[in-house]
Image (cartoon, rainbow, N blue to C red; front, side, top):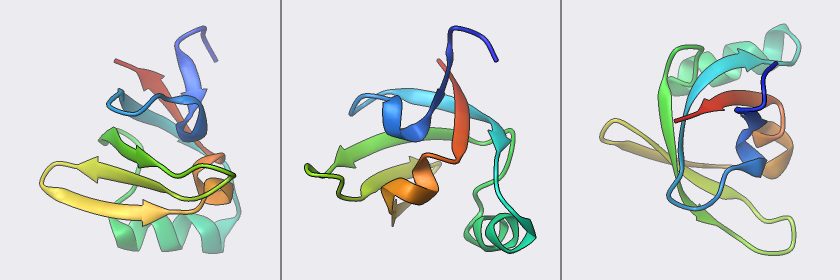
Length: 79
């Protein structure tokens, strides 16, 4: 991983990144795949709730909220 590689949790509100790696088991990857979260996608952080709360992300015209545990396993190259 490079200096520009971060987990989704580390991106600031409004930042964009390209998903380069998803760390997790088969079930985790399958769940994210169903949601459309996969390597190569560009994501933008819409909101970050305080106190270890969830993140709302956007991919294209879709938005979804994911927990920080999930977000910490999704690695992006910051754009």
